[in-house]
Image 1: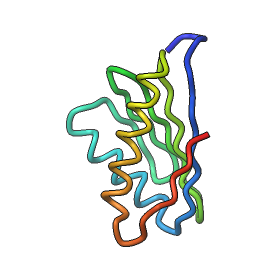
Image 2 (image 1 turned 45 degrees about the vertical axis):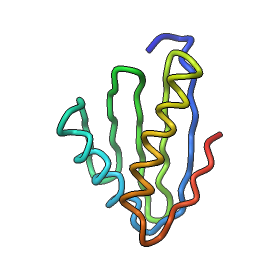
Image 3 (image 1 turned 135 degrees about the horizontal axis):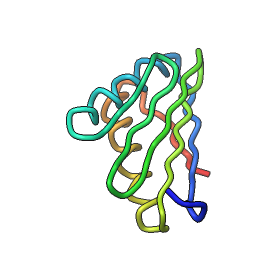
Length: 96
């Protein structure tokens, strides 16, 4: 990413933040470059990146891309997968 990278962040309240971080990273890790621990993760896509941070009550997801269309695609990909994994407690995802 260059200095012109666009970013968007969502903070999701959940007591399963670390679980969802790891689940997202493991899922995408089958096809994408991924690095993660229980508290931090990153996923590289051809059209952008996602960094994740988990504490006891919040999953922070930051997506970055070179243009607005790719940024929106990143938001949709990450949000849709989190919604699928967290279907028992549908997350409130508001990107800023």
